[in-house]
Amino acid sequence: MIRTRFAPSPTGYLHIGGARTALFSWAYARRHGGKFVLRIEDTDLERSNTQSTQAIIDGMAWLGIDYDEGPFYQMQRLERYREAAEQLLRSGDAYHCYASKNELEIMREQQRAAGLKPRYDGRWRDSKKTPPIGIKPVIRLKNPTSGNVVFNDLIKGPITVTNAELDDLVLMRADGIPTYNFGVVLDDLDMGISHVIRGDDHVNNTPRQINILMALGGSLPQYAHVPMILGTDGERLSKRHSAVSVMQYQDEGYLPEALINYLARLGWSHGNEELFSRKQLIEWFDLESINCSPARFNLEKLQWINQHYLKISNDAYLMQLVTPLLEKRGCNVINGPDLKKIVNIIKERVGTIMQLADESSYFFVYQQPSDELKTQYLGIETKALTEDLKKIFAVTKWNRQAIHDAIKVIASAHNIKLPKVAMPLRVMITGRTQTPSIDSVLELIGKEEVLKRINFQV
Image: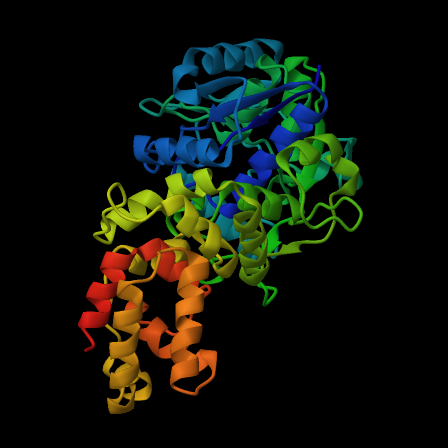
């Protein structure tokens, strides 16, 4: 069975790169009827925290990336790591190293001075020396000194690394906490992970992890290293490129469906398809179609995709999302105009839920036009026009067609074109120049409120 995993460190929020890795692992498992596992790698005691763990879980939940098993926590598996380390010591595949931090730093400085690559020199590998008193040892892997590590990356292709390039890495720290490379290998082995899909910043760790796995007598999973995400300027993605928590995208009014669609297209494609549902992603996703080159994050593209999903989304669904934002703006959603109908006429004009709230708020709360708009559209010459609008609206049957006809009557009476009535009316009622058709806007605001707003300008 296909078994994939997402194994973040809880040292911060779920960012775009992590979310895409989780998505690819999830989609691959779903495509093949497999299992997707969530594992929290919380052994960085100084930086790991429960808030970050919750932020990761919340981000995945919002995106709809559900897991079948977990979350598993490494700090709850310490006994298992120690047991495996003891196994390697007994088999002769690991050894205790008593070198102090200061001793190792001096060693590295000497290597740099000699123009060599800094690396552990194996001084305790086959040492017969008596262990120093008072120093707790680390446990190091006895890495093979000859031969090659060869594996076929499902994205990058065949990769070969000579064992001579690898030193004896630490498996267990002196405090009994496993290093990343040891913990991840044992977790993948114990959890039966068949496919390790992760960012290509881990590709250099893979040969080391394969050697650990071989020493443990495990079978290799298949590896797929996904290229990194760059900003539009070709630099590594950072906060200035909008590389923020995925939950910030929720706060800014993006739909999870849109972000999922966009993340999937960051480095993966299915023909020329730009827009596709979650169901289609599962049906189409394969590792062979992941691009070997870095993807580029483009906020404008995400906004375009989000706008598409807003247009096709169910009005009731959008109403649920926009209601709390309107209530924060002081809008009485329960006793006000029909929000579902408002959403229907506004959603094609906006790019985010936040904008949907902004563009819907004037239906509930009167927003006085600015002095600039008053000067431009509500001068002394519109006084008579305003009085006539108030009179005709007072006797108008309140539906869109009747409102439209009333505006036409006023335009005819003043011998002006329809927009010359509609624009001043729009400004005095909504406080803005851009809205959906003014007759549909007035219908939803309601006769009583419209007349009240006109009176503010008379």
